[in-house]
Image (cartoon, rainbow, N blue to C red; front, side, top):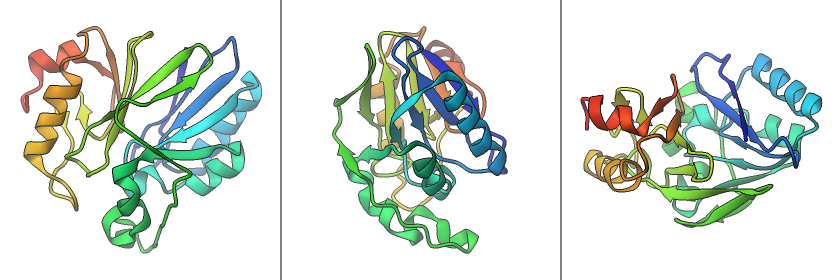
Length: 209
């Protein structure tokens, strides 16, 4: 599996293109925005002849969905999210898009359950429901290749905010400890913002944990 990261946007929000070079199947994880990001994603998909099977949302805050229409138009892919995130996606006051003068509403094409798998060629991403930053936040775990797409739940040396609508600090820490820190220490963590890390590093050095 190959990962390409796009974050040339003012929120420094990571958009991930995760694809199987053999089959040409892939997914896009989250949908931040800048014209440069969209152009670069389009170029990568065209160059590698990738078929984007799904757009996977880790959660519904505006910086992760603001380019959803553009990415859907570019790829023709359906939008997936955890079933508990539907309300936040549909309500601009909850997804915070009203704060930037927009009223973004998203109707997901498919609602996911905890433990469900999404197939990419011969690889599967498992949905890990990790509430606390938002009610329906989810991480996507590739056990075979040791990759975790963590959204805004876990960062290098930090954890997600819990002071936004639907946030809960106790629930967030429980999600991290019960769903993420139980994974192998070698698992590489790809967060919604910032640099990649590992489960082992965060277990031993993250001051919030």
